[in-house]
Length: 341
Ligand code: AMP
Ligand code: MG
Image (cartoon, rainbow, N blue to C red; front, side, top):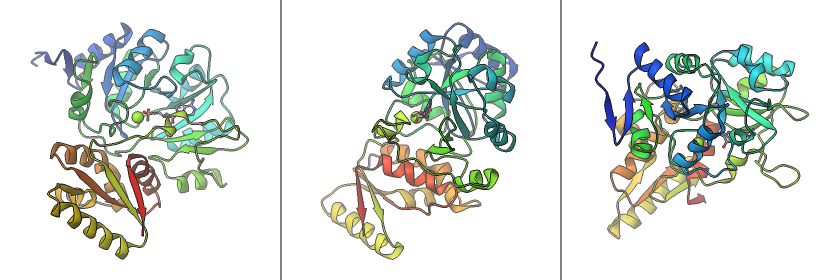
């Protein structure tokens, strides 16, 4: 096997063989940063126990330091290492949904520096459903703190190319893999209050959580009773392409009419207008469930529309059943304007 080393602006591009994953783990042990694939989006990982390494993540991403990271583990047994206390309900959820796109917010153990969690006494933790991610975390021998591997504010990366576009030269390595299959981030579920609350909709649908727990699971508006954001990252404009994005909501027929009217108006002025829905439908064949398909292609489409130099992106509301709730959440955060017809 050839072991030639490919670097892009100094960032190592690693393959998925055992030798390369050991190399990635070695970088983590030395306090470096490695971007790695998961089933949701690419993560930018550092040893979660190493405060200096974690601070390098904030710098590389240009991430506000009050936006906490998710800690990734390779077996549910490690839950007790990163969380000070694990309630019974957490095991009910991990039994059913791990490995998978569900992050649980629990009391933070002292072994995890406060910087990982933006100073909060809590920690978000998950076990990804991705063979390479699990091998990499296991080989590193520590829990891995990892936000999404994009420049802060930009659409999350679902391919190693997106990671290189944003972070080549700023991080030590990226592990090359297939595009991430789920395509949007994990569901963040707070278990530190009187009942479970979704802080961020994501890969595990609300309906499935409710079915597993036999109770209603509310979605937080993001603001706690004291007026403080309880899931700090959610207050920022996020997932945004360079071009302004107009999100159109309302009944389907009226949405489509308005979209066509806006597109026509700006095209007449000589602007390049991209429709997100049309772009996704044209570039990838529809497979399976329509909202899951939309989730899987959302971030790539936003990035590609930017590459094509569009001046304006138009998007329509999607069904909020299942993963559609996460898609709509991301579209709302990416939008510069939301129009209701
Ligand atoms: P990212 O990894 O970029 O998707 O960002 C992780 C997100 O998880 C943050 O922006 C927060 O919304 C959420 N999160 C992480 N840790 C916590 C925590 N301790 N409490 C509440 N929300 C959290
Ligand atoms: Mg992110």
